[in-house]
Length: 154
Ligand SMILES: [Cu+2]
Image (cartoon, rainbow, N blue to C red; front, top):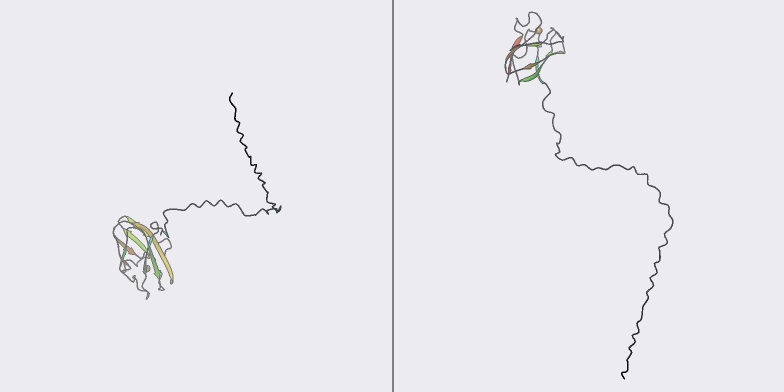
């Protein structure tokens, strides 16, 4: 006969009870912040152009003056400008009415203001190609008396 040996294994089951203590939070009603929901799309503009000058488009202004003593002439007989839209701005410091005009190379522009008196300006604007032009006073007799000059456009 064979004796059976019984081995009993006592297993100790450890039961760990986890108690979750919920934090007692005061029911503080969070005041809804009235911050405007700004769509902060921070789109960073690449290729910054700091103070890009608007080049082109603006007419260049060439100033001249009638003789202040009243002689029928300008204070200069030669003017220069770059090709493009050119405005001749003549001031008249004299007591004799004058105006300004430009002609040559198919251009024939006369100041729409007509003759202007003392302390006033007359202007004429024309689109000029490179070449030589004549600026003059369109008041009758003034150009013939010598109130003219040469405008060189480059
Ligand atoms: Cu004149």
